[in-house]
Structures are given as structure tokens and as C-alpha cells.
Image (tube, rainbow, N blue to C red):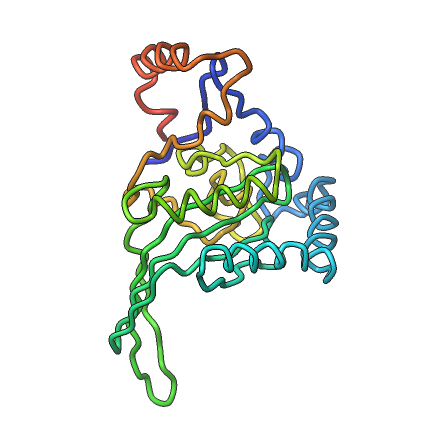
Length: 254
């Protein structure tokens, strides 16, 4: 089941997320339409990627931060930035166990969007099976569990990384997972002309499958307090959510 972008405007303000997507993506057009690439926002996004990713000096600012995070956490860092995707990203390897032919990895994923002051952090546990195929080894990977908030064994490193991010990127907000997995009607990225994209795809990367949501651990509304409207209290939120979910149990299912 798909869930489409929505929120309670009385208590939260996710309009900056929507506005950023609308600015850089021609909603309603597919990438196989020639008009898609003439959209001014696509040109602007290309300029941003050249500036932040393909300029060695600017990109080094981000890799310096990743190295700082790795040193502070005592962990291996693997860069996860792809030149055409709208984010700067890396993985923090918390644990790696290899018992041939199987490898288990527990890690944190962090990405900072280049189209707005947004970021995401989540934990991921993967297993990879290595098989020989003639002279070339093949790998078969499974993403087993995604942890979307500081929970269980991810709690301490998740919070430590979030603290480092907030210190280095003041003014940035973590987008809650329940927002990231929502789709937008008519939103397509250049990497998939057939399937509608999620908020995650638009802000960060294609390396995410909405099916992860069904294997998620933790609170998928974590960080929603960063998006409360000014003057709204926790009591206001609780009262509004009871009313909201009584009439909107599922946000715009397809």
C-alpha cells in the first residue's frame, strides 16, 4: 500500500519539504518527457551538484566532517555520495562479522540533502553471501532490518551521530521516517521513469526501497518535534493527533 504526502497543518510545518521538491522536480512530468529536463529546477539542481559534489574543495568540507565523525565514534566510514543524486552521504560501520561465505554488517546511514536543510539517519543490518561463479565472485545482499530512531543497540551511536550532525550543520532538521516513505502524486526522479518517487528519493537517494518500512524498528515519527509549528505545545500535539488519526487512520492510501 502506498501512502501519499500529507500532514496536519495545525501542528506541523512540512511545507519546506514540499516546496523544495516542487522547486527542483517537475511534478507531473516523467523523465521520458523532453520537457522534464528543460524545467528550471532541474538545471538549478545540476548547478548545485557541480558546486557541492564535483568541486574538490567543497566536497572535501563534507569528507572532513565524515572523517571527524568516524574518529569521534571510533568507527570505519564508507562514503556513499553519488554524483548525480541530491545528497552528500556516508555510512558508519558499527559492527562487521565475517564467517565465510557470509558477512554481517550493522551500520548507520547518514545523508544531507543538497536541495534544503534536511538530513536523515537510520540504522541498517545487512547480510551478504559470497558465491563463486567461475572466476568471478558474486555477492547476494539482504537488508534485514532498518532502525529509524535511537532504539535498541543503535540508540547510543544514533544519538552520538545526530549530535555531531547538529553541531556541524546548524539549522538542519532530521526528516521523520514516516514522511520520507510517503509518495507524491506525479513525482518522478531521473533514475526511474516508471514508478512514482518517495520523499526520500527526492531529497536523498534512490538507494532506498519503501518496502523497508515493513521491516522498520523504532519510532517512525522520531524527530517530528523539530517540525512543530511555533507556539505549539506537546499537549496540543497529543490532542491534535488523537483527532487527526480518528479521521485519517491512513494518509491517502492508493
